Structure formats: structure tokens, C-alpha cells
Amino acid sequence: MIDATAAMDVARTNPAPTFDSTSLRALTERLKAQAFGLGFDLAGVTPLGPAETAPAFEKWVANGYAGDMEYLPRGAVKRRDTRLPYAGATTAIVVAMSYGGREPAGPVARYARGDDYHEVMTERLTALHRWLEGELGRRVRGKPYVDTGPILERDLARRAGLGWFGKNTNLLNPSLGSFFFLGALLVEAELSIDAPFETDHCGTCTRCLDACPTNALVAPGLLDATKCISYLTIETKGAIPEELRPMVGELLYGCDICQDVCPWNEKFATALPGDSPFASRDALGGKDARTLARALLAMSQDAFHAAFRGSPIKRAKLHGLKRNAAVVLGNARSTDDADVLTRALDDQEPLVREHAAWALERIRNQASAPPLVQR
Image (cartoon, helix red, strand yellow):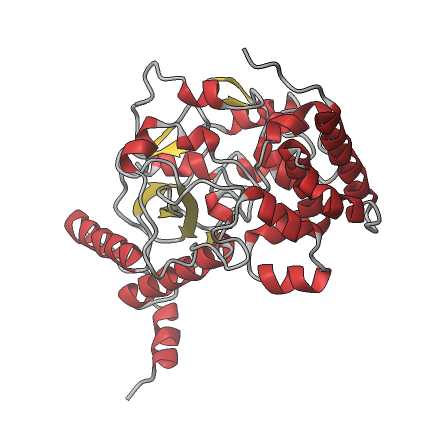
């Protein structure tokens, strides 16, 4: 009896099998069925090659719309051609996974309330990779990517037939909306290719542009990230510009507004299954903005690590969350929050102290304002 390892070693010495078109389609359909079984909601296949949107992306960065996200221009050469990030790969299996557009809106964007999607999707794409090797009976060179390399995932997803680019810059799917993560498994294997998604279904709708509190969507499909609330509360490492702080409102981490108002999400966004890894954590679940902001401002580093281990929220770090919390309380303008903000004036981080002082000034100005005359 030959064990699995020995069988794989033998398979590595043999040439890759060839398939006729019917067998190739059948293999690809089984692959997609396996992807759905692993919890992905969409799956498509596209050949690797020049990235159509690379020139537009590079122009976007050159125009300053990426702000302080200095990691984005890195790997520009590889980003222009999807065959380059993983040498030898010929095909992309592109998947999408819903994070629950039917969940209630709140101070934390829906994508960040549960487990880190990078880890969840990478693990499942790796399982899909192993399944493909088992089906082919040989080692298949490949690598999963989930926001982890110089790849324009939207470009691959459109080419794999998963959707079109919405005016809010998100990929939109006609049966799922846009509340989903994208990932890709790049492999050196032949599969049946899907037709690209060629049509645009936004029409004359401008709801997302009209709803953005900071006017970050400067034109259909064009985002100035430096004005986006998600950028301001997650990617910005320094102070949030004072003129934009009032527009942050009660949003502590990220923003879903341009997706919430989209008709495709109103019709087709899905609820999370009961066992979803993206379900809200206890530290976040059911808390309104003020309650959560007060809790974050009083949180210790140890408590932060315990509450958000394995969470995408760690990206902002505790001092970034406290900065955001001060802005939220400043926008709430309740004198009941003066105590926690006053204590934050002694925080070890200058960033937190400055935003707490701004929030206290907002509250004082509100308290001293003359009452409105009733007519």
C-alpha cells in the first residue's frame, strides 16, 4: 500500500494530465462546488495576464488620492501583470465571501466586527488548493492572495465574471450586492475559463455619491481616500483633519454608507449564517456609538489585545481607536461624556490627548450655546 505522501511524490515526477474541454469544464464545476462548500458565495476563473486597470490605479496614486497608504505603490511592476506576483501561475480562481449586508448598521463597519477576513479566507483558499491537488493527483504550484500582494483583486474578479465596478468603487454582483470580501488563488493549472462581466448596471443612480458625508466620491468610480471615513478612522495614523471630524459623526471604525444606500444591496445583500466567523464579537455587539466610544477610551492595552485578538480592528491600534472614540464623543456633544474625555487628557499618546481636548471644546461650546427659541 502506498501512502498519500509517496503517491504525491510519484505524481510530482509525472507530467500534468491534459483534459479535453468537457473534462476541463467538469473539473472546474467541481472546483466551484468545493469553493461553495467551503463557504464562499461566488467563484469564477480567469487567465492571468496584463491588469486592465493598472494604468488607472497608478494615475489614482499619482494624483494623491491614496494619501498616506505608502504600501499601495509598492510592487507596481508586478501589479501590472497578474502572472508576475507568483511566478509560473497561469490561472486565477477568484472567490467572494459575504460579510452580512443585512446586519444592522452601527459604529463599526460590518466587515470588521468578527474575525480577520485575511486569515479566514486564506485558510479556506488553502483548503481549496489542497482539494485541487487531490483531484489532479499531483502537486499544483499556487498561492492564495487576500489583500496580501500586488494584485488588483477587483480587476481579476471582473474578468472572472463576478461583477462590475460600482460608482462607489466597490465590485457589485447582481445577486449579492457588494458586502463581500474578495480573494484569489493563483495556480499553475489549466481550468475552464469564465466570461468576464462586461456590463454596468448602475445606470443613472448616484445614491452613493450623494450620501457620502465627506464628498470622498469625487466622481463616479473615483474615490479620494484622504476624505473617506474608512481611511480617516483606519489608515490615517496621525490626526484626523479638524474640518472632517464633524462629518465622521458616530462612526468609530470604517464606514458602510455608500454601500447601505446602494439599491443592489437593498435588494440582494444577505444575512450572516449562524456560524459565520464574521459575526460581531462580544466587545462590539449591540453597543451604540457612545457606549462603545466610552469603553474604548477607558480600555487598557491588555484588554484591547484580549478583546480584539484575531480581529481586523487591530489595524488601527488602541491609540487610533481612542482617537476615533474622542471624535465620536465630540460629535455627540453630551456633557455626560466630559468625565471620560477629561481622563483621556492624561493619556500617554499625544494623539489621544489632542482629540480629547477637541471633543471637550465641542461639548463646552454646545453647553454654552443659547437655547433655540421655539416658534
